[in-house]
Image (spheres, rainbow, N blue to C red):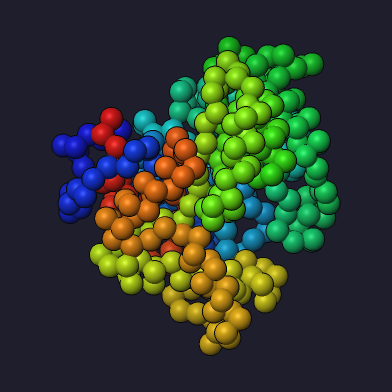
Length: 338
C-alpha cells in the first residue's frame, strides 16, 4: 500500500480514512461500445488500482445481464492477476447457488497456485436476475440451509477435508468472504468467516451486524468478526459533479424496473423521467457516498464509526471512464498510510 510520499499526483491530501479501501468492478457495459470492451476496461482499471495502492480488486458474477459483461469471476480474476503483480484479486462474489462446491474450490485453488497469496474468494447466495435466467441456471430457489451446507462443503474442499481432493494440492487456500444479508450473516458467523455487507446497513439498520458479532465463532482463518462495508463512492471536484456521475447507474436501475433487463450505462437518460422514476433515482443516490474528497472522507469516517467496518469496498461505476479513473485516484489519496 502506498505511503504519504507515494500519494497519486494531482490530489491534495485532506486526511486519511481509518480503514483501507478496496474496489469492486462489475464490468459495466456502455451503449456506444461492444460489451467485450467492458472486460478490457476492467483489467486496465485493476492495473491502475495496483499503481494507486488499493488493497484488493474484486469482480462480480452476473448472468445474461445486458449491462454487465462479467459472468465468470474465475476467468476474469485469472486475466487480472496475470496483468498485475501485487494487488489481491478476488470475487465479489461467486454465487454458490450456481456452482458445485468442488468446482468452486478447484477454481480457487488453481488461481491460488498460479498467483500465491493474491487471491480472495468472496461467495454469495443470490439467484439470477430474472426468472428465465434462473431457469437457464437450473436454480429456482436457494435457502439459507442449502447455502450453509454448500459453504461448509466448500471450506472442507479448500482445507483438504472433503470426501475427495480438490486439486491442486499443497496450495494455501484463499480467504473466504461471505456476501451476506439476514440469514447469510448467521451462516457466516457460525462458520467464523468475514462478511461483506451493504444495503440496509448503509441506512442505519445495524441489528444484523450486532447479531453477526454476537454469534461469531472464531476460526483459524478469522479469529474475530471482520466486516467489509460495500458502498457506491464517487469523488469529483464538486458535489454536484459527483452526483451527475452517479446518475447513469441510477438511470439503469429505473430502466430495469420498466423492462426487466438491467441495461448498459447511458450518457443521458433513456426518456424523460416521471416523478415516480425520479424518486427511484433519488433512492439510488441516497445509498451512495459522494462529493469532494473532504466530503467523502467525512462521510466514510462516519460510516466506519457507525458500523465498526474493518474495510470499505467501493462499488462505483459511471459512464465516463476518465472520470471514474479520476475518482479512483482521489479515493486512493484517502487511504491510510501503511
